[in-house]
Every structure is written in structure tokens, then in C-alpha cells.
Length: 260
Length: 358
Image (cartoon, each protein chain N blue to C red):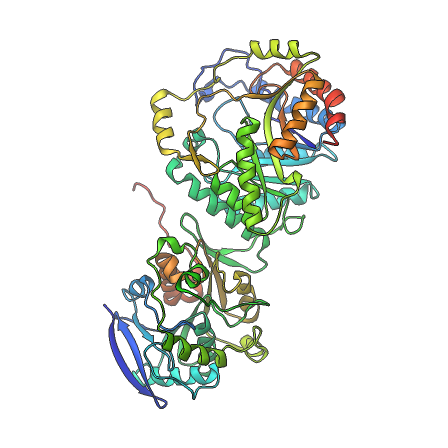
């Protein structure tokens, strides 16, 4: 079970949800705000999962101070330190993936490994953020929305507050400053894309692989943009394996003996 | 209309064979097998000379009826002995294969055949699930996932991992890649909703087989509707129709020959296995449930004199929308090679030139 906590950091009061024991895994959510999935639960069986609500999202007050994702990343690094996390694993979802990349570039000695779930740091030409009614949002985010409970309608006040912040943080589809720094990223990095992602083209995955020296790219079959919701077991298995073994996760440990 | 010759090999057994599937390996005659492969090459050189566009091979196991358990090996052998004709794999059975291995071998084959490869990806007939102990209830899902992975392996330029339901790989980076860009012309074979939707989503062709024009037209109509939903329309040659054709000098002669053909499946599964298999093997026609064809005889859709057959081909083009016919000109499994050669010659000289413009 996730429990709620608050941490004062960089002038913000930041809410987080925490569960599990073991190595720390910090999660930065996407532009839609924090949402716990079955994947968080599965990961909390092996990690101490800390899912932050970044300032200006969800229940937090409006954030008119943060101007850019590097700034937000720096705030979140402060928050982790205040929680006593000198080093930690870092997972970022969609635009949270871009914040996570900035955090790893700013504090490489603190991030043990990086997992990017459908990251929005490198977007195809014409990429559009998912907007509209809960049904429209679900069709963009999930591979099979009909198999999931309906998304709750987002409080209009929260939506307005988040939209103005996301608009400031979004940046260009191809961020030359970030991309010029990615070849220096030393953190072991796993990039995941769902084969049915309708927000960020899964083909963007190859650009991370080209730019980041220690990058691994994995496609999650039959998942949309919200991989952790669509295929939680598949997502949690590869994420855990990568966080535990880094690049050695390419060596299979699957046992095939049928009868000894 | 393009025309493909469905090569099944013609194994002439020197003895009567047990009539059940699987057929015991001990009943196989090695010399007869060697002769079947040797004469295949002669036949396909003739097929090429007659002007066929493709020769097709498919995957079947444990019987002499269609003696190509590895269609990729057959295709490689054929490619080395013919010059211009395209080689169509219709197709390798995806659900009981390693999709990465398939992607590699198909890419190799396309490269060795200098870009003359055509690929159909197939779920397989019901009995084939028994071949490598595939759970029939999983075959649909494994097919869909395997097809998706093959396309990804052909097109992804960076090493990648695959976190699937039925397949998992941490590292995939195939060499060689297919010679044709982005990959060989590819068809999802089958009349199911899943095959049609997969083909439409990936802008692939659709391959249907052995049903009446009316039934096959329901599948191709559904396929075209799905293509429209994805914002495109297939070219005629993106619809392949595999069928039996029996052409003779006259209609009467053709029907007389059909009357002499066996009405029994040559190698049937035992009833208990067939029934259990059928219960697990869910199939549909464009979303409408239908039973699998198990132990049945495949219909002969085109039959008659050259004039009659030409008209039937015209109707097939209009009703099914097929731009490629993949034909057996003599029942697969029949060892009457002379009759097959006569049918081939008659078709090549009196039908083929007249259906080119259909």
C-alpha cells in the first residue's frame, strides 16, 4: 500500500506516495499529473518506490515559478535529497522522462540508473499532447481503453493549472540543447516504448539509442503511451531487471528445463 | 491479374500410405523423396518459362501431401534454380516459430534471391498446432505478436529488446536486412478480423484461400474497410487469392476429372484429436465465428474450359478484388505429375495470356 508524505524542498511543499523496501526508485510523472498504476505496485515488491507529485501538478498549488524542465529537475533532486536519498534509481514517464534526463545530466553521481517510460524528450514532427474528454484521452493513452475502467474527468481547475505549467515546460519537439548533452550522459539508461504509442512515435526510441552511450531500447508489445497501465507485469519485469543488473540484463536467466 | 503457381512437391509413393495424419515417417521412401525435389526444379523452370509471376511455397508437416516443412529451405533451393520469377512464401507458420529467426532467414532469402521474395505470414492450419506442441488456444495471439516483431526486426535500425506476451528478447539487431526496402512485399494471410486489421494497420497485403468468391469477398471487403480506416487503399496485387483450379479442353472434361478426385481428405486426424483441436481453435471470417476446416477437402473454385475459367477469373477480380491468383492446377498431394504438367501447359498457353489484363 502506498502511503502519502510531504517534503519541503527548494521552496515547495511536495507530496509523494511511497511503498516498498529496498533500493530507492524515484518516479517523475507525465504531463497529466501523478497516477499510480499496477506497475508501481509491482515495482514496490522489489524497490522503495517514491512517486513524487511535481510542484504545480495534481493537488499541489499552482506553480508559476518553475520556468523550464531543467529547473523542475533540480527541484526534484532537492526533494530526493531532503528525503535522505543521496543516490537513487530514477524513472520518468512521458514528459517526466525529459525531467528525469535533465536530473541525470545535472547530478550524474546521484542517479544509479534511469528508466524512461515513453519519454517525451524527443518527439516526432507534428506531435500533439493528448487532450479532450476522458474518452478521447483514454484513446490516445491506452492500447485497449475498452479493457480499462473509465478515466475520471480531471477537475477543470487542476487541468487549467497544469496546462499553463505544461505549456511553459514543454519545449520544442527536438530540443537541441538537451540532445547536444545526451552523448555525455553516463547513467545506464533504459528507454521503453509501447508498440501502439499514439502520443510519441515509438520510432523516436532509436534517437535515444543513437545519442546516449549506455542506452537500451525495449519495445513493449501491445502497449500504448501508458505502458505501466497497459502491460504492468511486462513493464515492471524489464524495469526491475534493468535496475538490478544494468547492461547485464541482456543475459537471459529464463530457465527452460521442463522436467529435471 | 498476376498469377502464382503453388508448388507443393509431388511425392510418388511406391506403396499405399496409411490414411491418417501424422503419417508415420517409416512409410517415407527416400528415393521417391529425392525424385520429388529433383522434378520440382524441372517443373518450376517450366512454370517460369510459361510466364507465371510467382511460385509459392507453404509450410506443412508430417505428411507427403505438401512436402515442404521448411518453406524457407524450399524457397532458397528454388531461388538458386530459377531466374526471374518471384518466390512467395505463403507462408511460414509464425506461431510455432522464433520470429527473430524468421525475420533473419527471410531477410537472408530476399538478399540471396536478389529482391525477388514475397512474404505471407501465416497462423497455420489447425492440425499444424500439433506439429511443435503449440497450444491451439494461443496460436492467434502468438501469430499477431510474431508478425509485429518480424516487421520491427526488419525495420528498426538500432538494437532493441522485445517485451511481449509470448516472446521476449533483450537484444535484436538482424543482419542481413532485406534487400527490398523497407522489406519484401508482405501479406497477412487469413480471413480473420485479426489478420485483416493487422494488414490494414501495417499497410500490408491480405491473402485469402480456398473459399467461394462470396465468402472470400466478405473478408476482402472487411480488409479494405480497415485500410480506409487507416487512411489508405490497397492496390489490386495486395490481395492474393489461393485456390484450386481444374482446367481442361472442355467443361465436360474438367467436370469429369473433378468427379474422379477423392472426396476424402487424404490424411485425416483421428476423430478424438480433431474434435478436441477444433474446440480449442477459434477462427472467424471478418469477425464472424466460423469453424476451422479440419479433415475437409478443399474446394475447386475455378473449373472448366479455358473460356470458362477466364470468365471465372474475371468474376473473381470483380467480386473478391484479388490481383494475384495463387493456383494449384492439380490437387495438392496428387502424385499424377503428368496430369499436372498437361494442366500447366494448357493454363500457360490458353488462360494465362488472356487474364493478364483482367
